[in-house]
Amino acid sequence: VFNQELYDLPVQVKIDNLLALEKKAYSLDSRVSEVEVGYSESTDERKLSNCKGLSLKSKSNYFYYFISVVARSNEQVKSNFEILLGNKPDELNVDAFAAKAVKNCVSQFNGQQCESKAYNVILKQSVAASLVYFAVGSLSAEEIQKKSSYYIGKLNQKVASSKLTIIDKPLAKNLFFTGFDDEGVATYNKDLIKKGVLKTYLYNLETAQKDGVSSTANGQSVGSKIGIGTFFVEVKPGKLSFDQILQKVGKDGVYITDVAGLGTGINEQSGDFSLQASGYMIKDGKLAEPLTLITLSGNLFKLLADIKEVGSDSEIQYTGVSSPSLLISKLTVSGK
Image 1: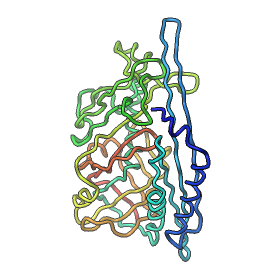
Image 2: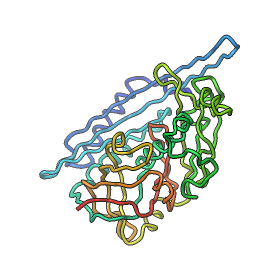
Image 3: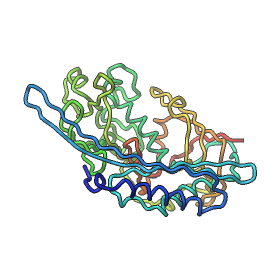
């Protein structure tokens, strides 16, 4: 997944792209008062060998563009931040990327709080991916062996909705591809949760030896030690578009586009969470007024069991998780 075209792209082209992105964002709405844009590029080369004949190497590169937009209207100030991650220069569409950032910013004006109750909730791809990332962390064999994971003793049992399949996919042909983990074990794609059933824990060499099994090639360097992690995880997309999922919500519901405080607002062992959130009301199958200063609360593992629909609109996040929109049955949203 090393792209020579990206490596050879002149710096001036990248600067020109940033200037065009900034100019376009300002031109789209007179309420836009501040625009910040940035670009980062990384090339990574790994070599792993030992005295027993192991000799491995890999090389990859990627970029990300970001745009931060601030808009003002009367006394209201709203902001939005978008990231584009990839390793092919033509993946940047300046007009579309700027339009997305500005639209998601100005659409927040005149936000209000909703009535506090349990709603059918659609989670935006990035929010769904963040929650899945936490859930997958509980599949670490290290957490299982320390008796600190929700998934202890649940192998081959139903732990989530039958609509949900989560795949550990290090061999996916994207910028997260890796043919070996940080211990030199050959990676492979595998189901973690298949149609709601837990299929495997995640092992490195040490934890695998303790349980008398093979490593699942999930050894990852964490400082000076080898921990357990994933390189790329995919929530298998469904067949429904976002508009079709909206129609499934019913008379009213909530679309959550952003959550804050994931690091402290969720208990990784119990799965209980309470997160400040923002989004939109859903009324009669359509997005309605924006919501602000609301709180999303519940239990992560119950949330995964309460998935009613999985969308087809997958997006890859910088955390290495790809997820579509998810429709959750009866999640508590607190407002006024």
